[in-house]
Image 1: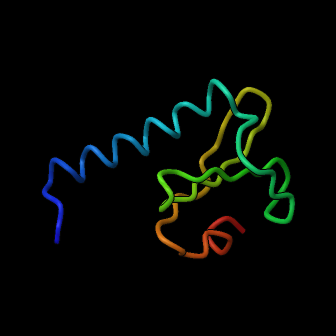
Image 2 (image 1 turned 90 degrees about the horizontal axis):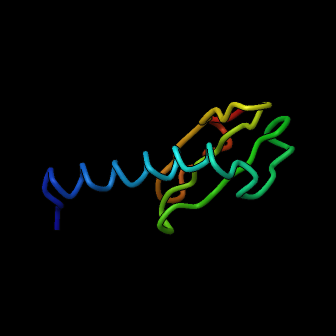
Length: 76
């Protein structure tokens, strides 16, 4: 079963909202020092991993990976 365009756009919007929320609480997620300095990862809706780096007042999204993809390769 495939989702329609509205469902896909809503899903993308929720991912974007999750990324934007990191600006208010960047300490969330699991620290992953093996991926680089200040790198953290959070899960999103059990299917997506969002890897990001916190530097001073900036949050940089490094990778958004879906359903078991090895995001570590995208981050390094």
